[in-house]
Length: 276
Picture 1: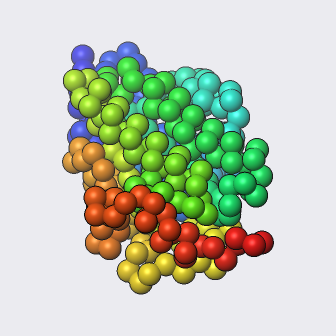
Picture 2 (picture 1 turned 90 degrees about the horizontal axis):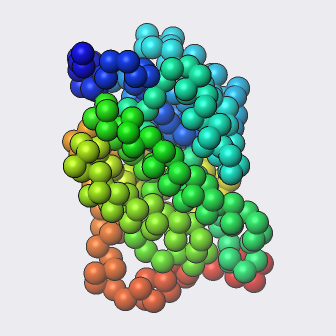
Picture 3 (picture 1 turned 180 degrees about the horizontal axis):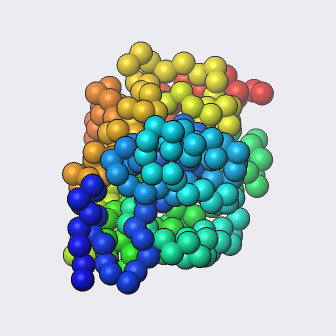
């Protein structure tokens, strides 16, 4: 017999793994905030990231707040075998994703020709390859539970990004892939949403090396606000979610300005490293 969970509306198929919300990059920032939001809305959560201690601390905060204790799976998603490791860890616990949140990713600030080539290729592996692997790995599970995929992209994916050329391109891939996959999976009842935040003060900035870059007033949002809007957008089956009124203008810019003009504007803000 099949049934619907009253807390989440997730479809539970008898004889299958217990449905969970799998969240990557969950050790800090937007990922940690999304873990709290999913838990608050009645989902059993699996937290995946490299740093086991941080995952355990987040899991404990969620449990202490009165929600179901999350599972934690330490995994380095930059490794080629990481998706298989994650799948085996879930299967061993008789869990399967009803919702998948691909939040793991990083960026780097600087000229592509001067940044470490291996780190930039690793960025593509994590931001694009790993995200794609995980998105396609559990299609049957997502369909069984009438769930969905939330891919965390960025408003950077809508515009060219000299100074973060590889990062912007990787997020453009995430947006395009998510919207295309959304249409393909619609007959299966699977929701796919691309969450495209603007600047969010998290560890991402430190990792990317952009601590001293100042954004125009009104563009930055908190991780908690981004997480809430991303969750609502996924549950409402929206294709793209851009949190913040100012940020909603960015996807429209390529309609009014040539891409080379946009690239020049972006470059002008970040060229402090040009002669570094």
